[in-house]
Amino acid sequence: MPPAGRTANCGAREARQRLKTANAYLLAADMAISDERDEFAGVAAGNAVLSGIAASDAMCCKGLGRYSRDQDHRQAAELLATSSAAGPTYKKALIRLLNLKDAAHYGFDGFSRIDAKKAIELARKLVAGADELLQA
Image (tube, rainbow, N blue to C red; front, side, top):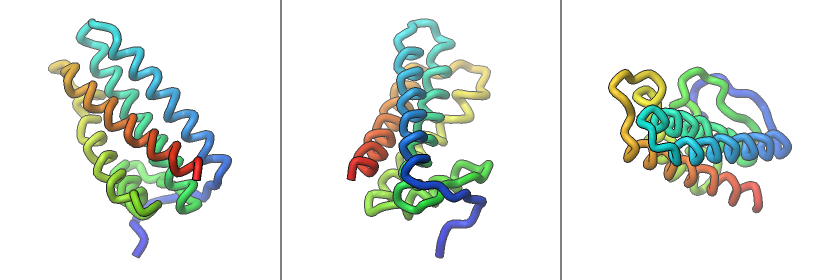
């Protein structure tokens, strides 16, 4: 049974565009984490989250011909799990990344550089997976 949630149709062209966007957010995350000021850790993580979501969209467009349009990004993770044989692995990475999202975007206590680096690592894994899928 397909995951619940709102989706939209897409194809190879949209997959390539979302992968470009994922790479741009990842670059922004890398630039932000290179700044030593505390407030840039959350900015880096926020961009990593956006990168991971865009990479997930790219994989879903390529593998399923549709991507999640649901406001709950966890629906995107459920859809991602069905996008390819490696989908369940990427779902786990996206869920871990989404678990960092609230603290990075809305927290008042600061966001640790360690967690920001974890977020970037997870985003990099998702971007690499999207790149590999789109190359196939």
